Amino acid sequence: LVLVLGFLPIFQDDVSTASVLVAFAMVLMAGIIILPPFINTTYTITAQGVLEIRSSFWYRQSIPIQDITKIKPSSSWLASPAPSLDRLAIHHGKFSMTLVSPEDKIGFIEALKSHNSSIVAEDHAKYKVT
Image (tube, rainbow, N blue to C red; front, side, top):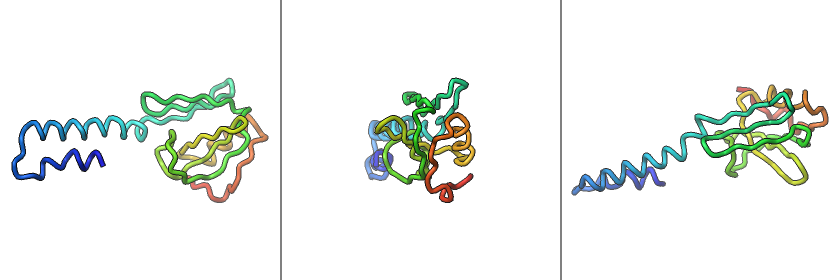
């Protein structure tokens, strides 16, 4: 919506320099907020058995792999460090859930299970490997 509204002044008859600059600034700001999660999202398993999630410049989360109880496919629209809607829901702790979208979902699950064999992977046939 911001991108569309940002370009709206350009399509009017009497375009001023100020309105073009405002439009450009709106599009630039939207790009700064929207694009980084798609470019800079990483999931790392440390030697200490912790899943480190980093997305964009501001999101960081650490999940002890021993706290992970279940992983299942998800296409939830909830905000998360998952730049795709082809996601995995990681249930950890008592009531926590984090959505991720690793490229190799099966390899990701196997890597987590190598640190915690009690992780339950639900609906395993639904995982897409890209």
